[in-house]
Length: 502
Ligand code: AHR
Figure 1 (cartoon, rainbow, N blue to C red):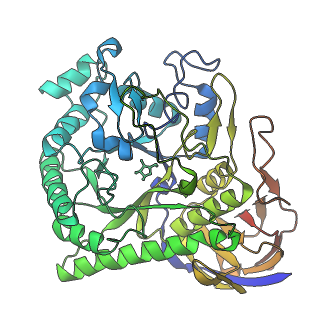
Figure 2 (figure 1 turned 90 degrees about the vertical axis):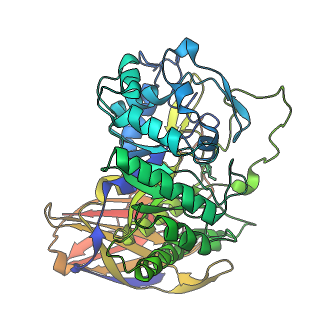
């Protein structure tokens, strides 16, 4: 059995945990919207056509902020098509995902759905094929209370109160050659700065996200962030990060260490943002909006979507990942990476929510169920509160092909002094050995163990399915003891665990 030691000290604070860390991302892609959150005629559909079985699961996930409507989709988005009487809304081509977009579900519908899941709207702007004028129009439509052409149009369309959208993404993945309107860092930095300045003239209270790289592996990574922030530093609040991981060539060891790569990614972006800060002698600190992150088997994606002019399917199933136990463990450890950078990562969006790269599966006309990745997200969102703590960890290590030598055990923790509670999140990356972990936490003053939940299985590739929706789930871990300020527990191989303490 492996053994690891951890010390937690309430004075060793990373930073407050922003609830926006537990955000999601809903894109008009595949069956994410149509057949996902919206399916009129479904047995559970409410009067607006929203699946209530999905709404219940989204609420259980504890998702906070929802980025919308894309993703790559946003770079061809015309928001005006999506509002007003439904029978007058045009059908368009969704170029990003080679499908048809009827616009039956648009901005008002999404805002109404958010009311039902208690979510905050985070809008992405089209800076691919459009620019500052359309961004201003959308901001006027959503945030001006009344008395202007677009505010009155919103009111006429049924929304008396403004949506008061706070968070805005200035485009999406503009560094990616696949993006409609892809630009150089200089060109993007200039248009992002102009758009941000114009938007703040209209509403000074908004929070703006500049596009960072679409992944740390991009050839322009680092230089992209430096250039974009050189143009936009005074205009924006956040720079975005996006990361997707998958197991490649059966290399489970590297895959389980994905969060190590995520840590390095975050720290590189922080270093680059702080470099621009020091060059500009600025007092302002830029935060990170990690607004796309997940496990995604991109290598399985068929990039050769039919290109024929008469073949634009409606809501084709895309990237409906089955998600195994190992995938769930990696998602849990990515959440731990976000927590230990809570001082700089203050917003994040799991990509996505239903069906497409999602923790929730929804069968057409049938059931909705939780995939393996659902569990660590829901539990972390529920338990992590107060401050994220720095963790002093001694753990055995192993060598990975992709990420070098990394810890076999990983730990993150939160401490809520007001509530008198703490939570500890642990991962065992060993594929064949249990780990006994001793956590010295007497300084926290917690005296009792609440839930101890573990995601693990004899088969790390087990997954829940429509036939067996509870095949993979959390189990109470009976090994935990807390005595004289010392928590001890055993972690199965390839596992993620959450411990609640009071
Ligand atoms: O989430 C799926 C896609 O991944 C998004 O549209 C895009 O931004 C990213 O490449």
